[in-house]
Structure formats: C-alpha cells, structure tokens
Length: 465
Image (cartoon, rainbow, N blue to C red; front, side, top):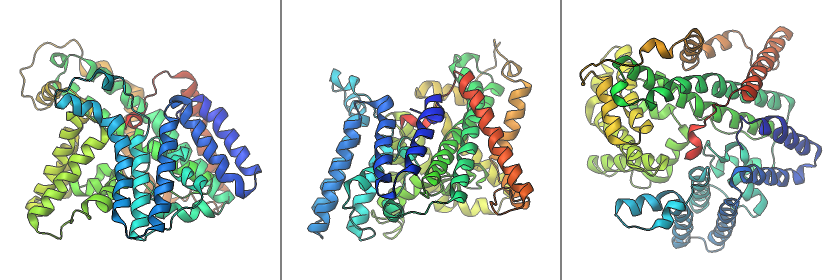
C-alpha cells in the first residue's frame, strides 16, 4: 500500500484515525501496530514474517543486553542478525553474481519493501542500549511499533530509538498538532503527485530512448527533471510521514533542508536525507575513528562510509559508483578543494555542487554503465551530433513549464520566506490566516484526490530501497 493510493487515502487512513482516537491511550499503540502490519501486508504478505522476525530478535537481544550489560558480543551478534536479513534479501544475488557463483534460487529472492530502513532502525535500537543512550523497551508491542510504524516504515525517515522512546510511552495530542500534521501531509502529497510525477513523466521517456537519439539539450532536460523528481518524490514522502506522525502525536526529525541550494558537497549531505547521513555518521563513521586517527584514516573512513551509502541504496555497481563519486569528491574537498571553493562567488560554488550532484545522479538513474557513459557523453558534447527523432520541444508544454517553475521555487527557501512574512502556519494567527491556511490544505487535497483517481503514472522511487 502506498500513501498515494485511493485505498490508503479514502479507507485505511480515515479508519485508523477513527479507531485510534476513540480508543483509550493504553491500547492505541496496539492499534497502530496492527494497522502497521496490515499496511505492510497489503503488498508484502509473505514478508510480514521478516518484520516479525526483526521485532522478536531485537526485543530478545535488547533484554539480554540489559541483563548481561557489558557483553559486547551480544551487541555484535544482534547487529549481525539484523544485517544477515538485509544481506540475504538485498545483496545475496549481487554477491553470487559478482563472484560468478551460479545459484538460480538467488534470482527468485524478492526484496521486502523498506528493509533497509527498518533494519537500520533496529540496529540503532541495540546500539543506543549498549551506549547507555536509551533504556531497553520491555513492552514488545512498543518495540514492534517502533520498528514497523507505517508512516515511515517503507521509505523513512530513519527514526532513532532514543528520539522516540518517550513518545512510545507517553505523547501529547492536540488540535494544533493534528492540524499541523494534516497540513504537512497535504504538502507532501502535493509535492509527490503534482511535481514529482510531472517531472518523472518527462524524464522517464527520455531515459527510455536509445542513447543515439538523446541530444545535448534532451540529456540536460532529462537529468534536471530526474533530480527534481527524486527530490520531490522522497522529500514529499518524508513530509507525508512527518505529517502522519504528528496526527498520532509523534514528532519525527526533518529529513530534507533544501539540498539543491548547497554550495559544497559536504553541505549537500547536511541537507539531503539527513536521517541517513546522520545514521552513518553516528553508527559507522565515528565508531571507525572519524577524524581522530590521522588524515589517511579519516579519508579511508569517509571513503568506506560512502561506498556503503551507495550500496545501501541498491545492490548493483551503479549505486556503488554513485557512492564512490560522492565519497571521492568529499575527500577532495577535505584535502583542500573546499578552501579554494570558498574564495569563489556563491553562484559558482552553487553551480559546482549542482554539477557534481547531477553527474552522480546519472549513475543513480541508469544501471547499465555503458549507457550511463553514453548519456554523460551527450551531456558534455563528447559525441558527434546526428539527426534526432525527438527534439527538446517535443517534451515541453505550458503545464510542464508552470510545474517546473513551481518546482524550482519550492526547492529553495523562497516560499518559506513568504510564509514566514505572512504566517499561514500559525494556528493562533488571525481568522484570515486560519481561513487561508484551511483553503490551501483543502485545495491541495482536492487536486491530489483528482490526480490519484485519474493518473496511472505514480511511481515511488525510494520504495525499492
């Protein structure tokens, strides 16, 4: 089940909200847990057992680590059991293929939705207990809800246990928080359906063309549209997850902070998929030594983190190369490039960052290395021009131009500054402000409902991770 499906919007979510708020607090976590399992089982019935396994294993190891505190081997074993699930379902076929080991059963292994997200959450739970940053969860329902809570189960953000532990036990509900949740969900839904889908509807047909038919202008149009698609797809999902959390009294951390306005790759990763970059920083980079053990070790740690970050997104060489590009550029920035960049005007720093990000997105989008190389050649005029079947104007219309303009505005803090100047988001504002806010929410929900009912093109990029 996806957030943009009629089943979720018009049946599942209203029913869960109704049952949740008519029930006493002591059974509300149970209702959300059952709802989360049904949400996952809707499209992944068999893999609910994988989710159950994760819940039980981490509950048992959490209790054991508390009973036998100081036993590091319990932590290592618990982490390895979590990783073994991920490795089996996500990487086994890739590993066997890489080493030319022919096992046909590996081709029939399907990837459970959201496995990378709930596995990383489970690992953070065990590590936080070991570090003394969180107390063990003795209630199996509460722990099960933490691992499987449907708003962020499929595509994040990655929620830390120590950030949500108190909310699992006791949380505050209010009209203000619920309305803020509906508003945030509406904005995320609109970002996904109105902008991300429109950008994808242009990018996908161009990427589907034979590389010999992709001109310089089409190549740049496709990768720009894809960059906007993946941003509004994922940030829209994160907005919906954060909004849904607020409806049920939970407060999740932000996952995006206008990444395309960054003026260095380091800043980009401080703004893009924040929950993942912080997870790698706190649970891998710093435990490896961070920048405390000399320059070479720092570069190695950074290199390893981004290799694994690439593989986290998918078990294929193109994702590894995507991570490698980011890791290498970050190391070069750390060596001294950042000092050179700082002397440039801000516009050039911004263009430099966008260029690196867009080039890397080519390998993220195109799995075949030779096709990605041809696409880059088209982007940089490295291949001789020929006669093309499709020109730039074939994919452009007034609706796309208007949507693209809104996308560029919303991808920057311009709209936030307007809203700050005219406080639409203040529940305690004037009656005019409240009415305008309600109108915006209703308008976006109506447009989204029409698109959900009418459109057959509705991909969610991050579901496969």
